[in-house]
Image (tube, rainbow, N blue to C red; front, top):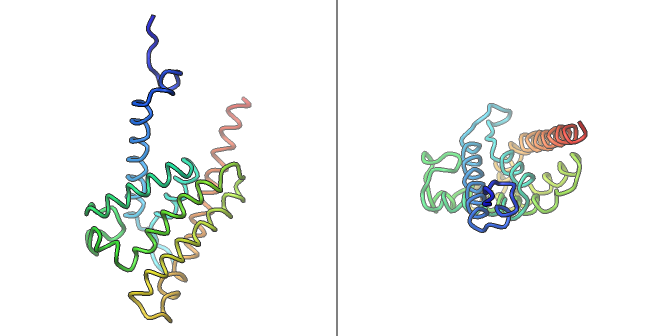
Length: 193
């Protein structure tokens, strides 16, 4: 008797083709989510914000470091070849030229943050995840501000590249931490019930 290949069957779990397809779909879905979040602008003070930080942190928590880094690398590669996946593209340029511009350091920082958050947040509660995600923003801002410093005078770097964004990023990270706590509560309720 031949058993059907379902996602939960032992044959599917060990099947390299099934794993490759599943991982490819996950990467493409992650890239689509980051792209949509980069293009979504929410009115906020002192500047409008995108949802990119929220999407990247949620992906890192949900998938772990390997998949989060794979998704970010694919996202960056899509942008490098000229696909308009970044915030402000194609209006502010595309491809490598955009990545070498004022926001290029932030993109590199998100790659580092995805790996760090994916690795360090596992097994932590809501507050622990929040702390890890705030820590994950350190490379984002360090690399972002370093890249931005090539385009603006040094005395304006913090005022243009950090101060207007830190409140929004903190709120987005708190929402991700609370969202994951709520999901875990629901999962635990379903298991207990």
